[in-house]
Length: 83
Image (cartoon, rainbow, N blue to C red; front, side, top):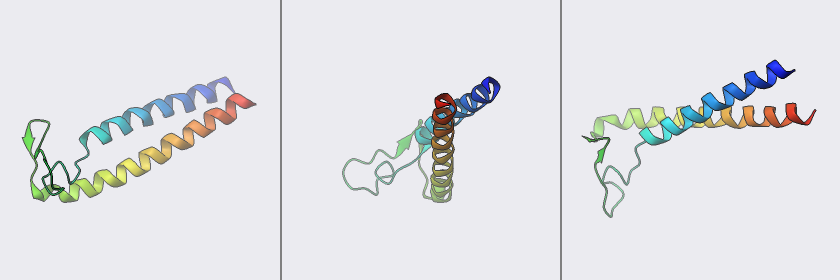
């Protein structure tokens, strides 16, 4: 049982790190200048190209699945610690 708790805890940590990395690399409409006031247009020292819209869609899906995995592992940890 302890091994399973450590395994789920490690998975939770991996999901948390992946979620932070995905959110940092996520590009919003405001950052590309399409949101009106003060869009930056530069993320990570490079200009955002309009051809990256497919990448933004991909990152949206990745963020959704990583967040779901993180929540699932968090619930599993709570259940394992309760018993």
